Image 1 (cartoon, rainbow over the protein chains, first blue to last red):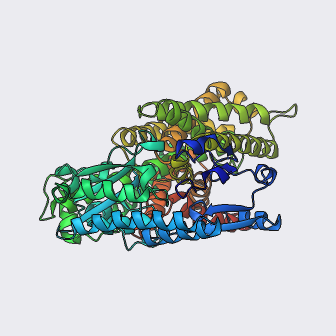
Image 2: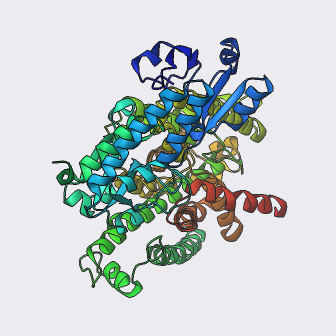
Image 3: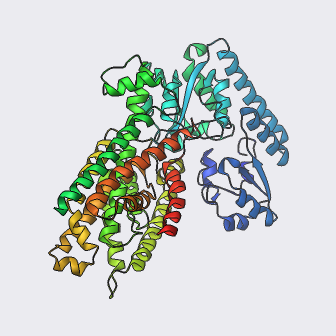
Length: 240
Length: 336
């Protein structure tokens, strides 16, 4: 909403929402897993935007029974992120800004794809957490981002969005690079690859890429920042 | 004379279980989400890892760095929990006494969480604080259970339920305060997960399992007499207070080291000692070491299911032990 010029109409958000900095000054309704229904009703919003990344079916039903409209986004790829930006723009009467934003984002994403087109795709393991080992599966939109960044996720066909993954399968997949979403609101968590991957080609060759998690985990405009960072980390030669 | 017969029976029962356990370790190490060549793997295991027998580097690492440590951790955790359960049941004269149901596992889990939150980088802090948590929970349950009329079995279980639910609330409270990115891995860990067999915690868990089982087996004769009742045992020369402290401390060490390494794996301490007593009788000199071996066997098999059934994804082993354990326990309840 901030990116399409509707930031002044945000009456409440979650403790997780820290970008842009203005978002921190909005009334907080709890975290993404435990939003306070009472506080949301008290803020009298016309519509509540929900990302199903937070899996809140009961919560959305309760909002609907209070006659508060709910808009749910659940993008599984970058195209889905663009679509939800456009839909939100249309809904808020910020159609032009939304389309302009998506146009710009799409240009940037196309530029990345052009740049890495000639490069050989890198086999990548995406490590969400080391102990226990979690990764990104078929339904995670970062799997699409990896593809666009000139990479093949070795877990791209695993069912689900964030599956717990077998240590031995991760090693046997022989990833050439490991992506560690870390930093940002994650702090220093997830800053090193899992013990089991110590002898993987990726760690041996030193291709462990730390990418700001805020750019990879949130299906918003900054996903394109994440895409650019990933592509640059995996194919530095393509961006000289 | 009686001792000699018991000794022989113990040696035969434990010998058979030990052979089965070794076979299980070897067979289960051939099963996993990645398939390894069976003959070469057996050859490498027989050489204790000194020869690769034609296994590739990755296959060798999978077998010796990932799969076997995990199986050994499963054995240590299973042995620890079953031994702790068997000795709680003897000491408290209560067939339902079990680390998970008494809240001891949750106490250890709270200790581990405190270690993770405040001393995250230091792996040694985990078993130490888990032990402290387990001991505090044990003593709390024991004190709560002692009424004017002594500790009745019902009172003990009620005290266990209260301590368990209280500690569960503490866990929920702390996980809510922890940042969102760590919650998911933590909830998985709470259900019991053996994938994190680390270089520090694995030797700790194995050492504790072995030493703890030996220590409790040495007190088995006293525990036998205690099953007659504390007063009778005292009259027969058992130092009741000392035995109680030994069992509480050693069982807390066992539960603490296994929870620190793997979270709360439920039902092991309940199902395994019951099965052992049903087949070998209730002499603790046999049932405690046999429970240790049986528990190791049970968790190794349960974890093999957990890591292969939806491979390459994984389930928490606690879900499997509960799925097998709860119905088995209902069956045992109906039979006895």
